[in-house]
Length: 435
Image (tube, rainbow, N blue to C red; front, side):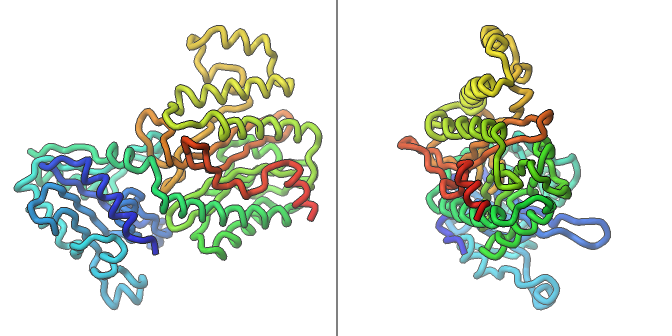
């Protein structure tokens, strides 16, 4: 169990951000239902988990830092359990267990939440509600129980001032505490075990889904619930499809295999990409492209990622210029064309530049409770932020793509690579595959 000190410290950050005349409400995620009467495994709203550590549905947290009763400044509401629920669904948290997990002294059954909010609404006129405001959210428009809960509050108290809690949570979640970093590091260690396992398994003729099976076996046997995200196991030209998910093709002799796959641990995520030769040996051309990507990867970690640098406006542009030089060296771009584009400056949009044919995605994102973790609207690297580093070159005309990715902790004194133990040099990969 994660020490509840983590969640108490996280709540303190939000308490400090809220005004004395306001209160905040955070609702749990819902069970993801399939057709008929089945549902998928529950995945908690990461904001609620960040603040409470509670990992079950039908949970509500209310924070009210200005309440005159200290016992009511943070109240957790959980689903009332019973013997029948235990038989059908398993053990749910009772009040004492919820208190131990969260560090919150006042825990009530969730049938009391409406009455408590009503009592607060009589005194406090600013209500902070939480929405998914991730910049890359692709969630469809629909009505969920969480939406209905927010609508009910707004309908009951239409004259109150409603404000956004998400910006405060985004700022609070950017820098990771030592305990959070240790949980991400454990996820990275498990991921490394899975990668080493498949180095001894991959050979011509194996199916992409067989590799997926090897990975999930290794992840689960070391305490992970499974993949941090849907695994990408892409052989040959499949690697040029950035979000390839079919994982159903045979791995052929002479092909490269791109694996963007990682383990979660205690709700915290890792994010790894490696590209290996199916037959255990890179061709000269494959190795040249691989080492070009690796040089950009090293440059990012050693020099380009520093606290205070804007990710979109500075870092991505610096990476792009480094990648242009590598693509010139590989004979994929003409220097004259690149110099002509650079002379145009901002008049030529980045997505229109020639290098984007071969490298069309960003190089870094925040990592934590979400794989693409939340960050302010104009994100910059900050001390103790955990980020990915993932440059790539994709050559569908040559039948392969290469991406390399590690997770690092941003530090003024020098970034810490949480995946430094996972093989990445071409020679080391070939040696391990040779047994």
